Length: 117
Image 1 (cartoon, rainbow, N blue to C red):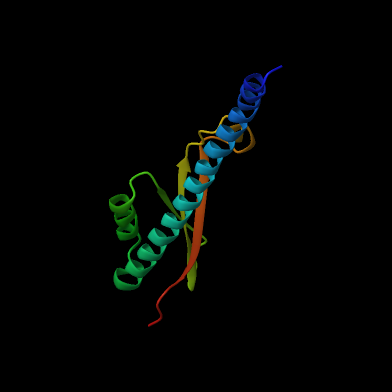
Image 2: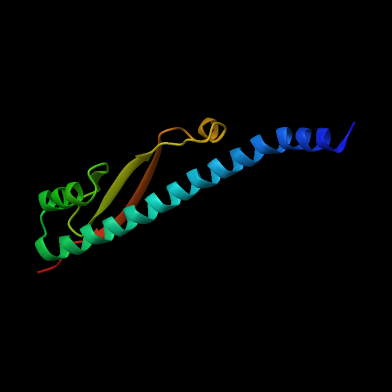
């Protein structure tokens, strides 16, 4: 076999693996970026809570800054509650979407303490 045949076979074997890794890398980076953005939005909603102290206002703020996300308020008591923001991200990598459910749900939560007095 000549040198061109070896190069073609190497390309046919290596190219799908490289494409799989590249697409998988972008999917993982999209998940990381979305989680970071949700954390920033959660901090913004928490700051707004300190100013207005109304639950309805928090839902409105989230719809303005991220219409794709959902907000949930859990474990309300006299001292604190948990804010949970969820958003679904579609996985594009053919093998990765079998390992990680597509759409992948990203969930970020934060405990908010109520003001006293």
